[in-house]
Image (cartoon, rainbow, N blue to C red; front, side, top):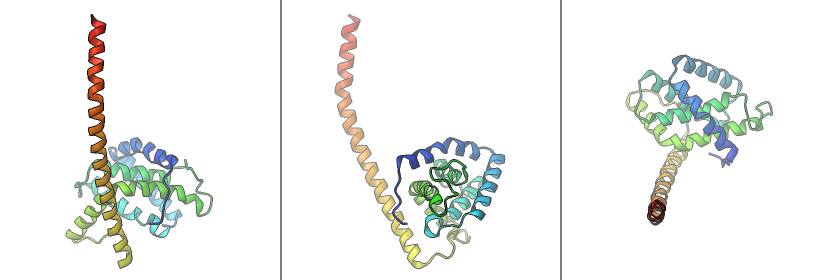
Length: 194
């Protein structure tokens, strides 16, 4: 995937769709309307090669989840995908879709942001589809594209593991630092009670 810059505005756009995504996921009527709007949008928008090639598999995974066919991923994965696809069909844009080519850059960035979070779950879904004898959703994927995808999955898993390790270290440091503060607060509270 080309280098895509994730700005605070992109992160905010992605995060703002999560509540609505949860509502859609829990309401079959809203899900139907969402999927119809998404199909209409995709008819209007070319799937810009590699940048939006993950959209069909995201839609497939959402549908499989909603139908109860595939539930081997956390609900947060489905919410993340719906939130990013909501941005694709939303009239609110950082860059207006009416601007040829450039108008899709913010949509691509929001979808890419969620893709980074869900790629491992999507890979497991694709393996499930293959084991169930179903066709994979990445159409016309070359060996080079498959290799790139595998490399991206491995890179993402490595980044996730590294981030988790660093978060654990930070938690330990914060716990250690706050222990001293907690005891000082307790002492001050005890003094004030006297």
